[in-house]
Length: 138
Image 1 (cartoon, rainbow, N blue to C red):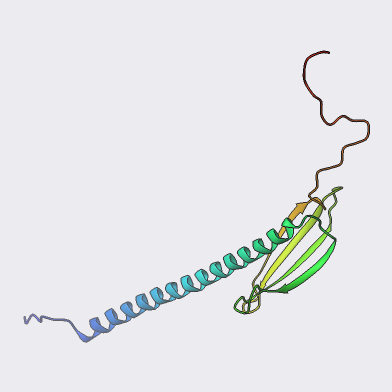
Image 2 (cartoon, rainbow, N blue to C red):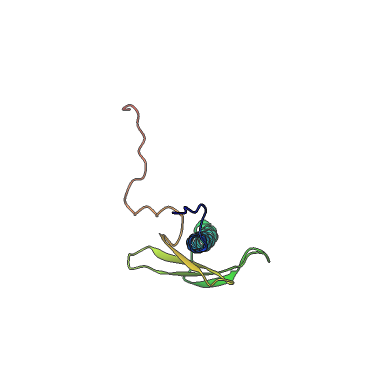
C-alpha cells in the first residue's frame, strides 16, 4: 500500500473556508465595537453639553417660567439645546429641563432639575427673632 504525504485539495479548501468564516466574524465584532464606541462618545458629549447648559441656568439668581433654545457654543459644536422652566407640583420649586440634540446623528439627551425660583434666603416671618445675643445679666 502506498502511503501519501501532504494535504489534499479538499482539506485546503475546508481550512480556507473555516479561516474566512472566523475572519469575517472577527471583522464584524470589531465593526460593531466601533459603532458602539462612537454612540457612547456621542451620548457622553451630549450629556456634557446639557450639563453645561444646566449649570448656566442654575447659576442665575432668579428663574422665570418659559422656554429658550439655541445652538452650540461655536460653529464646531454640532449640538442644539432647548431649555424649559415650569412650575413643579411642589410649592416654591421650578422644574428645569434641558435637552441637547446632535444635529448630525439625531441623538438627544434630557436633564431635569428642581430649584427654587430665586436664590435669596427666605424672608424671616414677622414676630420671630432671628438672632439672640449671649452675655451676662445686667
